[in-house]
Every structure is written in C-alpha cells, then in structure tokens.
Image (cartoon, rainbow, N blue to C red):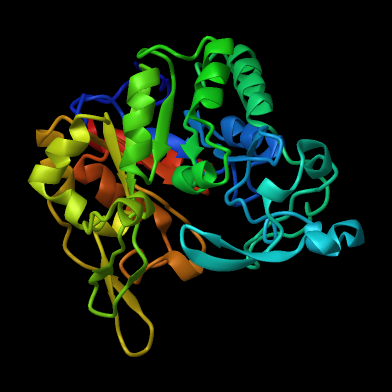
Length: 357
C-alpha cells in the first residue's frame, strides 16, 4: 500500500518493494511535544509523517492507553500529585526492578487526571502539564480525522508494550487491540497498520487473530566502545527458556522463522550500522552490516529505530547534520525510519529522492 505522496516522484528506491521508505513519527513529534499526546501526533502529521506510532499499555481496568512504559514516572506529572503518593511502589517489569507509579495500578479515570511531560531534559519543557494522557481509541479517532483533513491516508503503527508482563498481571490485550482495529475499519491486510512487538510469542498470537502486517522489533542494551552491540534475551524467551538473543535472531535461519509470523523487522539501528567511541567520547560510524540485504532476501521489510537529531545522538560522521545519517540508511534500502524529528526525516527522504532522479 502506497501511503506517501511527497516522494513518489523518485524511481528505483532500494527498498524491498521499490517504494519510498515510510516515515514513522516515533511517539508522535516527540522532539517537539510530550510523547504520545494527541497534540504530538497531530504535529507529526503536519510535519509530513506517513505513520504515527502509539505505544500501548493497559490500565488496571483494562483500558488501552498510549504511554512509552507502564511506569508513568518519567512521562507524566504523577510524581508532583500528592493524591497519588500512596501508589508509588517497586515492581518488576520484564524481570527488572523499577520504582514508580504504574498504569496497571491505576484506573483509566485516575490516569485521565494526569498530564504529560517531556521525558528528555535536553528538549523543551514548556508544554509540560498541558496535555492529557490519550487512549488508543482516541489515537485511532485522530488518525481518521487527520486523514480526512489532509487528504492523505495516515497510517498507525502501534507497539504492544511488554505483552508477556501484561499477561502475567491478567491484562493481556491482544484481543482488545484487534477489536479496536475492527471498530475503526483497520483490520485488513491492506489497512494502513503495522503492529510491532519485541516478543515473537506476541506476534504468533496476533498472527492467529488479525491479518494486519506485523513487525518483530529487535532491541539491544548498549554499544561498546569498539562498536559491538551489547544484546539481550527477549523477555518471552526468558520465560520459555529460549536462550537466543536479539542479535541471534538476525541470522538467516532465524530471519526465516520470523518471516512465518511477521512482515517486517524493526531493528535498533546499530544492528545495521554501529559506531565506535574514542577515549574523548567522539563517535564515528562503522561500515554497515548486511542485515538489510539478508532481511530483504527473506521477504522482510526493515524499519529501524530511532533517529534523533539531538547533538548527543549524532556521530562525528554526521558532523552535526542529521540528514547524513538518514542518507546512509536510505542508501542501504531501509523500508522506513522511526524518527523523533519527523520534519528532518521527511526532508532527508526528499533529498535522497532527488539523488535518484
């Protein structure tokens, strides 16, 4: 399905289907407005996003809301709200201990009283406390509205956050997610929808109950000074005793397995092109791997995360120009990019399109 209008003039894109790569607004226009708010999603579409990305978690009473994590301490004003002081506690999420305020302890009505805030200190804090916490249904309604307003088909790219953990708490929400997609006529293979998950087991469940396109996300823990990606074992694999890491899942055999349940992979971008860090902290891009090529050989699209233009995330190779990084990945044939800076991604794609003429 072709959703892009601006770069359709280019020919011979090195993507799997030959079409321009999509721009996915990571948590909305999260560089400019607090994550996962309706305002951030609207701004992202105004900046040219093809898809908006809501991370999905469940409240205590089973309402699906959009937050980056079940722990609300970093993305809401809950720590400043005395009426919620007694809800602060320690809890394990995917086996790791955290302290904070958790969505699974609070009802939707309670969460509706909270307001969003910008979690990254280097970004503007001027909109903190202004925007409410959105439900997934509100995001789907907004997608429909924005498609009408812009005359473009805006896609939605939800992520099921910590599905095994939610199931452990009696809050599995795959069926609710699919029911909402059905309600908004978004539950077809051709629908402008990708559902993504860091857990292959979750994709297997979704494969049985929905025809929409599915994406296996591949995470990592850190990047060593020499550029080696420090990987990890997915939580659902930990529970089942499967010792494979996310890095292991990028082998040809495991890519073939992923293809049985998914249409695309969403790797942390350093699995495609990492960087080394010298003793002064200067980062330099390394040569790309063959991940994109091998995934394409298995019929899998590749949509890496996350592109950020903040100075702390750029390497010396980009020399302060984020477009350079995008160009490198577009040249490798990625089928889309997740970006906090929607406008930068859209501009870089147009620049690359011009080079293909």
